Image (cartoon, rainbow, N blue to C red; front, side, top):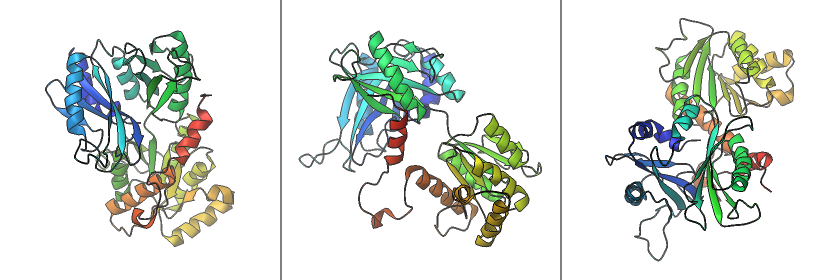
Length: 392
């Protein structure tokens, strides 16, 4: 999940210098809001801005509010939208509505920030729960730091042991699926009540993109993967091709046989349901062994393989001969990518990225102009959240 992670590099020097910044975070969206919950905008002491809460629609208003909150230290929850009665008011031209929580960030107001930055930098999951609304204004802005298991320390407090216990349990459900959202309780953390709203920012580790085959298409895909927020690894058994110089945007370049590397990563618990695997070599001696491993893994977000339809048919027969079932083969996206008509490595990388996005969120890959209904597909993440949440 993005958000403060996007502005952390600019925020930490301010925090370490003992200065105060204003931070606005999207905590709720209604209708066609341009940025998701967790999107953040930072206003530094020198007036410079990093990040965005709306893609430009209400940034000016949030800038002014963040500057004021940094000065007063009093957090604010503001709603921005557009109405038919006042179409020229500060609002979202798309017709959406967003709630933005604006707070001051300094060593005094957020003493745990350094530990959060360490967790994010080390790819350790962590969540920050912040009271954004409460009948008692002294509760607003209080934070609780939540980590995945009970053995890990929990920092901060929302105001009472009862509230801390309830929010810790529920925040772990959100953290398990990497989702940021608002939780509602009674004033003292009662589950069947109202009055207190807590925004949970989940900082799950960046999902992984494993690209097998150190070819020019892989360089373009690594750039796309990095742009989408993936932690990209390029792996190839040929050291002459698998070099840092050829893949400057990848987080890691590995020289190893693809199937051996993937099996070792899976055994180490470094492959999960958010991982995407892209096999680009279209060479049977590399493709078939690594796809045997990939398609038998129980929880992988995406498996795709490059090649012509003739290559696909040959590869499928080889995989069947290796014992893969029809159910396992059905998980393979091959030929990889959506039909965008692209030809260059860069265009092909966009096609592959589009396929990954569509499968992640349940999109159909059709032009939005040809369909009706909601633009965003939330069913998949909703079902994952319900399965892991302890809210009753």
